[in-house]
Amino acid sequence: MTVSGTASTLGDYKRLEWTAYFLNIAKAVALRSTCPRLQVGAVITLENKIVTTGYNGAPSGEPHCTEVGCIIVDGHCKRTFHAEENALAHLGLHGYPLKMYVTHEPCVICREMAKMYLIHDIIWENPYGDHDDEN
Ligand SMILES: [Zn+2]
Ligand SMILES: [Zn+2]
Image (cartoon, rainbow, N blue to C red):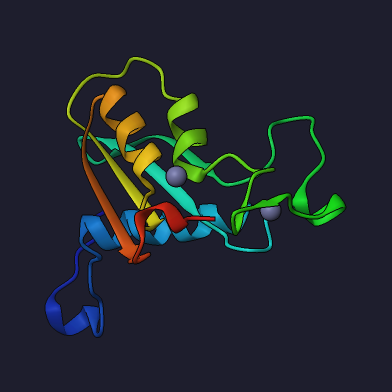
């Protein structure tokens, strides 16, 4: 069987470029977040293949913000780990250079942690102004 297509038969076909592709996936990952204040998703890739993902939420086995409410300290929810922290926590040894795609601009702590885990590049969609403000 032969499958082929030309520009005319493909109509409005558009191939998503990598950055938009991974940011869209990060947005889907964010939908798993259990903090109603802000849903953040992160995707870590190696050579355009997904290595791990994460979203902000309470640690496994602990009650979620959606069940028992947020713990607000200085305007941030302290019940949850950040999406980037969760993605990095599940990152094994995969090689280099790793890239991280995040729905929202990472805070200073997540940026530092990303360096520690050899993340080479961080790409995000929504600016957060003050870097400490994330969730
Ligand atoms: Zn919360
Ligand atoms: Zn963070």
